[in-house]
Image 1 (tube, rainbow, N blue to C red):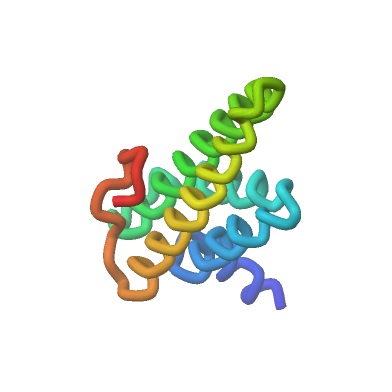
Image 2 (image 1 turned 90 degrees about the vertical axis):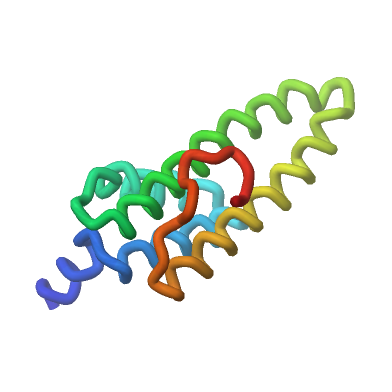
Length: 118
C-alpha cells in the first residue's frame, strides 16, 4: 500500500494524470485546483523534460486562472465579469484538455509558457 501511494506522489505520468483530473474536478470543487497546483509546483523542476513541461504548464494554468478569476470577480459589478468568467471557463477547459491529450500521447507540452492553449 505504501509503495502504491509513493508511486502516485512521485513525479511521473500517473501523478500528472491525477493533477489533470484534479483541475477538471475543480470546476465543481475549486479547492481541488489548489491541491493540483501544489503537486505541479513540487514537481515542476523534475529532470524529465516531458514531465517538466506539463508541470510548468499546469502551474501556470493555475496562476493565470486564479488571477483572471479575481479580475472577473471585481468586474462583475459592471457586468463584464460574467463575460470574463465564461471565457475563462472555456479557456481553462481547453488548456486542460489539450495538455491531457499531449500527456496521453507521451509528448511534452509544446510551449508551456504560453498564455493561450497552444
